[in-house]
Image (cartoon, rainbow, N blue to C red; front, side, top):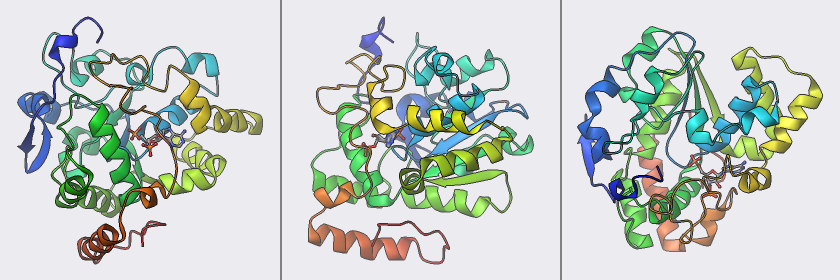
Length: 297
Ligand code: A3P
């Protein structure tokens, strides 16, 4: 990453089966679509900025039996590769990295359910999905798009709210993303986790994850994992805070990766008028689903 800063630039979005993805991903779509999953692969799936990194740290620690030193062996993106990530050569793609990774693999993706490689479903792989309420997710994405120098320019706040509502951001519509994984819980091994629930009672959610992963750990280890995955500890941990990413990729002077980590931060950014328009549109887009978030209306 540090050896080739010249490959990073703000890539345009190119639709793949109707979903806007960063250009290098669209250009190398074939190997992603044909990725060969193994039955013991675990997929961590999220819409960008829903709490992916948080979940990655928790899962890595559960698999490590709470061994903090083991979880510090490498940065998040090395420990748990990002399935669809592609930079222009010479950087290896997510698929290149994963093909050579030993089992059991834990894999990160932001792909909406309909674009998840079919081999994951054929192999009945477990999927952990993290969802975060729309307005906080949007605010987090706005700051991320400013500092991530490979994402399109977010432009001014007001325009960004509209882009998010129209799904004109990388990985497409938040609404479709959260809804489809929710629906597909009926057909696949998906554990649906809410960011807001993790904020409310992290230990409870860690226990849910352990059940799903069929891992049993003593109470003191569960408490250790809870502590190690708190916002402040992760923010201070170079292996989980993305400080190891070069500035040509993440400009931390614009915004840190571990920004605020709160529920309801949207109240600091939405005007009353923006909120009214957003909420009315939300009602329409979320009509007919049983999926409910807190702190939305
Ligand atoms: P904010 O921008 O609201 O602070 P992702 O990993 O999907 O990119 O999500 C990043 C968001 O999750 C950021 O939100 C980040 O601060 C938050 N986050 C990461 N680790 C967290 C933790 N341990 N507790 C709470 N929020 C966390």
